[in-house]
Amino acid sequence: MHIVDTTMFYAPASGGVRTYLDAKSAWLRGRAGVRHHLLVPGPRRRSEGERRWLPAPPLPFGNGYRFPLRRGPWVEALMALEPDLIEAEDPYLLPWAALEAGRRLGVPVVGFYHSDLPRLAGTRAGDWSNRLLNHYVANLYRRFDRVLAPSRVMAEKLRRLGVERVHVQPLGVDIERFHPRKRDPRLRQRLGLEPDTRLLVFAGRGAREKNLPVLLETLRILGKGYHLHLVGSHMPRRLPENVTRSERFLDPQAVAAWLASSDALVHAGDRETFGLVVLEAMASGIPVVGVKAGAVAELVAPGTGLLAQPRSASSLAEAVRALFADGWQGMGRRARHHVERCCSWERIFPRLLRHYVELTGIQLSGVAAHG
Image (cartoon, rainbow, N blue to C red; front, side):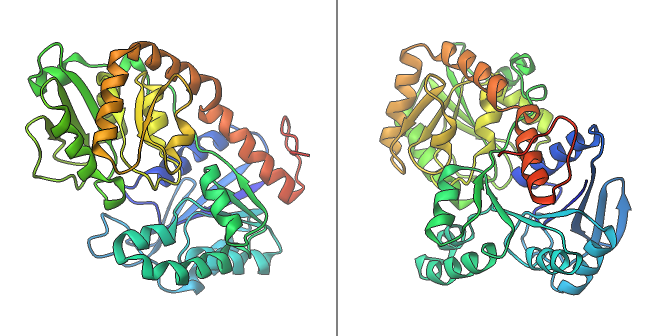
């Protein structure tokens, strides 16, 4: 079976989609009877291992992302690879190229709904854009042979838009990279914290949908005895006294060390399509304080953290205090056990491969269809 993924969500500092694709490529590399290629935008045409780049212009202020403008070269490149199945990971030009290539090759095409385009645009441009973009999303995703959504909340949204053939396919986490043993006491010392200060962490992009102003207000409410460290790019510069930030994009190893060295992850985002950092924190052995909205609420299993009301700094602060008042270290251990049991990539990817077996009819050793 030859699988080809294509997306514009693949940049040096990109997040969950690149994490998924890199983990998928590594996992498929070890499976008999499977080949995998990834076709993504770059500054020039080149090939390296399973990856193929086609030239595309950079997005202004796009943090390394590039936006393909012409469908034809991508259709030709996909057809030249002769896949048995194509998967498209974004809602822009490349899924249309994938659909055309799939039609011409006679192979199934999967759309993975990683990014909630209407809500993302609504956050930036206002709700006036939602109706138009909902129509666009419905028109695009109805065309796929199967649509995968990383969370129940995203699958339900697609079904409300009239998209059929939607299946929930969660993402996973590298439980060796994100592990309690990555704890580094020097990170707390670098911040100059008192031994009894509770160190909170948030890791991700400093994007508007992460609701970082709510996090900052939460720390103002919590005050002395609590410290928040922001890990990621484009974080705010004006911070309360008990908040610090990384000055640059950090590689996954550095992020893993910050997570394992903290006492809890706090996440105010209420529009997450999945929330990969939540699993990364849990794999690192720390509990999570999130909100009762979006996909984060699906990930925080009972006994692994607490949930607050969305967009309420006072509710989030109350949840943080409650976390440390009763058994937070046990929650961290349960969080680690939970992801080991259900959320490692080794447990997630066989589920994904069953979708491919059903769609292509190509049987693989040890992989049965869902039935």
